Length: 239
Image (cartoon, rainbow, N blue to C red; front, side):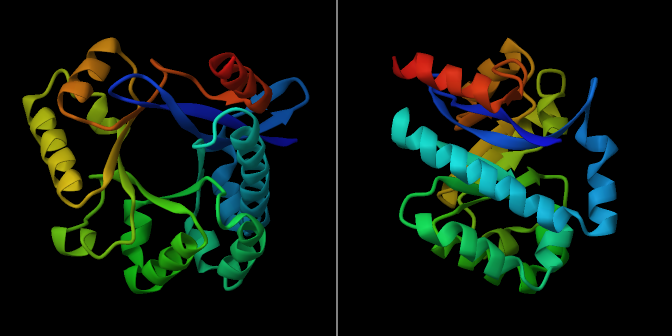
């Protein structure tokens, strides 16, 4: 009953579709169960490990197909949890899934800042190995943890995602605007892309473009949608 929904991500400068984030949903008979109701249970029971492998396989199959038929540069992001990273067979299983498509597989790995920093000596080598398999690494919820410039320069990352709690107050708080400006400038100085998630209004989108944010994601631009609906969007864009 699990399936993946895809929330589109757009290049800020021209609204071009770049890819999507794969989000797990549970479609029970007669209802759609939201992640907040079951992800913690998957974590506690350890079922997040096989479910995470399912998410990776399904997202990979979709992105390989969509890159071949619609958009060669398309990328799909999948989230990795703490329990998955602690699993001793994590890297071997990811390698087995990704290796056949190593040269051009279009998968981004999203890991939260706090999770990454929780055991940086263990996690950094894992992320480096995933990059060797062709993945891009995205630091999620950036600004909510306790990273420092010293650590950020060490991380094998390609992009950071500004947490939606900051985006939601961007237009009301000069302090938040200043912080987002500094995050974007810092990221660009380290050759990192910046994604703003939780963009819900036109005003937020305009401000983020002015601040030179690279990629936008949120309900204002596109809600999570089933794979077949996202494929229709791709087909229409490539027609």
